[in-house]
Length: 271
Image 1: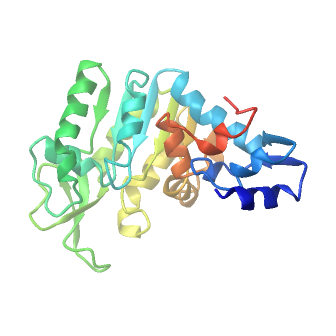
Image 2 (image 1 turned 90 degrees about the vertical axis):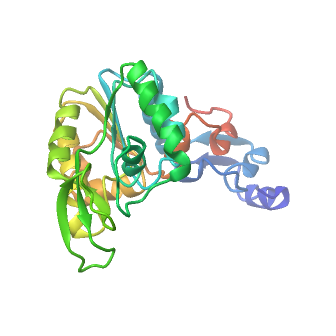
């Protein structure tokens, strides 16, 4: 965010409109510094839609409100979970991050992805959810593979019976049914993070099935950017969602309630 470069960029225009929501969580010359040197700066229509959708779902959701969180790591979503506490009615956990919670409950998870330094925190989150009467859903079965090779043997097992040395790479059919029931009566659904390694056909069914369930719900559906947006597109459900964010890290940071330099630099910061 160099001042000299910012002023050079500003020399090309009198008015600056920021439509780059995907970079709003970073402090760059082209998104932050430039606003000090142009006569007028403002948020564009896309930026306003992003902020209204994501902040709206956190601050004033129509209830019942269901949050679906997936992806690889608990550490990447922990602040979102904390920020949603007290505002959400149900939390659905899938993807690699689910195995940290499953291990925290005392079950063996084979070679599935786990953050051992997050186990105590996972236990705290589960206790807090129970205390706040938030329904907390974890996978009850999963698709496991004997290795990470493309031709590895796969099978479906309960999450309590993952064999030693095997990898959990997708949610199973019982989990798909459980999660589908959980979103059925929702009025607002926020989804950030896939349910498995959906880039590979063998482990895409859980994520795609959930995309269909979310699309079929009579609810306002907000999809976080990045992998989730791609998964929804691959499932053929992009047109069925209320809003799909263009931001990955930016969407996550806004959902966490954190400071956004690219938004703070705008005098008409959209709320």
